[in-house]
Structure formats: structure tokens, C-alpha cells
Length: 629
Image (tube, rainbow, N blue to C red):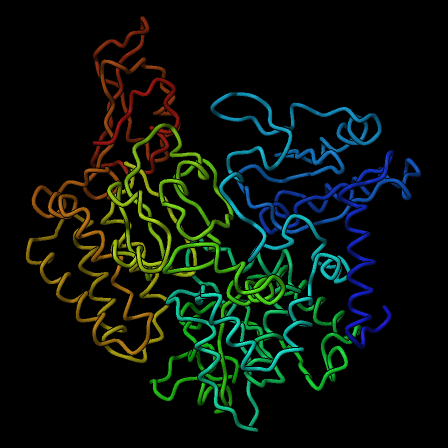
């Protein structure tokens, strides 16, 4: 690749590659472009084999000059993947398997015939939907800021990123003073997307104007259970995050940036490393970038999966090769950070928003969102919701819209119970909170927080005491142990929750749990401990009756806590088919002398003293005769 040494060469590459992208998306008559989702979820469902098969058929039919096929970033609608999209018609195929490729190629690519059976079916109208933007999951989204380029460009081709506008924001920034860049980000209203929502430009402004080395750090650790926002952004468009880091590095006077990404994200790490290498060869990373005095280099450090390393000072320790444990503050990293030099830590999504602000102008970014929070937010929407996936919505979108309009509601027409936002650091919001707008202030006022963007939906079958126990188990495993309130307090909270879920809890345990939770919040060293008990306090406040049922009646209303639940065969429904007894791994299901509905068959019953509560009987019963009670 020819080097880009100045602004004119960047503009020429942008125009040339942009023209190629337009040809790809708006092909000439007789030309086709095939893109296949290359996110982790779809790759695990054989999307690489799908693209390989398409490329094989293109070569076999001698169509290399008329048909292209390549991987792109995540489409977001994970429950419908793998995706195949064909241009110029923009036909979107869902749940594509390798065995479908030959039919797709023959009908769509060779004969311009839509393969209807592979189109998305609207669950309300039962009609097939051909275009991505006509699917309800996408209608309320705005996937052009943090997810810019995802599902459109090849993440391993920097020329496609450049053609899609990459480094236009950097070029503009390099023609501004550092203070002007910081002011631009301040005026945009961008707040950190990693959890606390601190104003990004203000954070940059804390770095002293000195000649000592300074460092930009990208937090790609993302340890929340069920979260995959940052991973997907890096996988889909690594150049966007690199550009955001470069702009931030210029603004604070840094010449080196460190990407801290957990090793469990091999695809993201691979694509990020390739992008850095290719940009170095292009001259966009290195010395005298675009003919200016600005020099910048990027480095990658792999995290070992410690949740506490999402805290910025623990992350800095880890990069330095030390144990990932938080440091007391002050001094803050902006004054004394990596190797005791001024440093700024921003998360992946924050940096991915920065190029948009510099490319389009702060005014355009500031028109999106609410008075409290500008721009968009990326969520990993999961749990008991029909449309699981990665979504980017304007701030101010309500939780109801997120769950029902985008998420498609609760499976099986079950009743919505709660949504956990903010991961282990957040809280559970209930039906009364569904019209809460998504922004930092509103979620905190409702009793939760934005967090990094995990959103786990729960229905009537979830036990909220068990949910609190799950998060506390996670926190206990992930506590670094440096401060005793977190190290000892969270373990004691887990012990009390376990006792309650085992049917041995008392009202005194509830009082102790609440008091201990507040003490841990007030006395822990870092944000992990300070927010560790949010799931406990929020569930105790929203669902006091469930906690009381556990300790007063020793019953779990949701029939989740195994030691307070048993399986029961309803005599009136039992057909005597013997399927449950044949499936039982401990032979605890036997016959009674009572006749079943089928002549010659007898009603079964469960010996609860032997039952291990595996659930195989209930899941295997075809007549709904087995229930929890």
C-alpha cells in the first residue's frame, strides 16, 4: 500500500475507496456484492464457512469480476444470525447455514430471485421482510455513531474504513489546537460510556500541559456478564477506535496509546492488531502523521479476564505488569497514571464516538439525546427477550421501547419482571420504570445506572433473590481482595443470600444484609466494592415480598431456589406414558395403583427424598403433567 503522508493523499484515498464502497453497495447492472456477518456470534455458527463457500462458487462460475464476497462486522440481531446481505438489492437473509449457500447463489446471485424462506418473518404480521431497515429491531436504532461501519465494511481492510470516512475527524483535529479539540468534545456533551458517565472533554482537560510523556489508554476489558458491546465495536471497525484514541492522544499531548483488551476476545485482538500494522505501513500511525508534527503509536496489552481491571487504576497496574489492584486516589491518573506519568483512560465506545464528533461537528452530535446525556448508547440486550442482540439507540429512548419495540417483548407471553442495567454494578428496574428514558441521570434516579451497556431482561420465572446471589457470587470471585470491606463483606453477603436461598434465612438476616450492603458501599476502596451491593439493595427495595417469602414461609415464589422447591406430577394430567421415569437419572419416579387416562396405564409419582431436582422429567413431559411447587 502506498503511504499517506499528507492531507491531500488521505483525501484522494478517501475519495477512491469511497467510490469503491459505493460501487459495492450500489453495484452496476449485473454486479453483486455479498457480505456476511463476521461477529463472534455468527462466526461460532459457521459464517466463515459460509463466506468461504460463496467465494468458492464465485471462482467456480468465473464471476470474480462481477461478484464480491467478504466478511463485515456485527449486524446486531444476534438471535437471527448468521446473516447474509446481498447488494444492490440489500436483501437480508437470516439464520443462513452452509447448506443454504448453493441455493442462495443459484437463485439470488445467478437468477436475481429472492429466497423467501431465508427472509426474516415479522412475528406480528407473519410476513417476510426483505430489507434490514424494515425490520422492527432496527427501526428505532441509530447505528452510525459508535457502530459506524458495522455490518458495512470489511473490518480487516483499512481501505474500506478510509472510504467510509475513517481519519477525516483526525485530519480536522490536526488543524485545530489541542484546546480547541478538547472544547469540541466538551461542547458535544459526550460522557464516558464505561459506566460513571464523566464528561470526556473534561477528563482530557485535567492532563497538565507539561513536556513529560503522556499516555492514552483504551479500556477494552468489558467484564460484565452478558456484555459484548466493546468487543463488537472493535471486531466491526477497529479503525474507528484507533482514530478516537489518536484524536484523544493529540488533545492531551500523548505520543503512545495502549489498548487493554481481554485475551478472551481473540477475534477483536486479531483485527485490532492487523489494523494497527496496516496503518503503520500506510503512515497514518507513526511519525509526522499526515505531514504534521504529531507522532503517535498504538500498543496492545492483553488482560487475563479480571473484572477488577475494568477499574482504571487496576488496569494501569496490569499494563505495568503488576497485579491488577486499584490504587488509592488522589493522585488521579490524569496527573500520575501509567508509569507515574499523566494518563487518560477511556473505554472503547467512548473513543468510537470521538471520530463522529470531529468529523461531523459537535453541534450534530449534541442534537441527539437528552439534556442530560447526548449521543447514542450501545447495549447488549439479552436475557428473557425475543430479540437478543447488539443495539445502538439515541439517548432518551425508553426502557419500554428497548424491551418491546426493539427487543420484541418477552418470549412465551410471559410477564416482564425486571431489567438489570449496569451489570454487577447496576440495579434492577421494574414495570413501573419502563417509561424511564435512557440517560445517566434518569437511570440513577430510578435506582440503577447506565454502566457499560449490559441490559438483562427477566420474566416471572426469575427469582430476584437468586439474581442477587448470582451477581454476588460473581463479585466475590472478582474482588481483588485489597480492601477488607469488599474482600470480607461481599463474601458475608453471599453467605447470607445462600442461607436465604437454602430456606434457612431469618428476618434478622434481611436486616443484616441491608446494613452490610450499605457499609460495603461506603467503605470500599474502588468502584467495584462501592457498587457491588447495588443488585442486593435494588432487589430488596423492588421485591421485598420475595425476600420475605423466602424467610417467613421458606418458599421461593418463582420456584427457582432448589432447596425450597419440588417437582410434582399432577394426577389429573398424567397419562402414565412412563417417559418421565425413563428419563429420570436417579430412578425416583415410580407407579401408583391409580389408573391413568390411557387404559392399562397408571399414574406416576415422584419420591421427593430421592429427587435431585434436575428437571429432566418436567422438560421431557409432553402433557404438561409435571410442575414445580
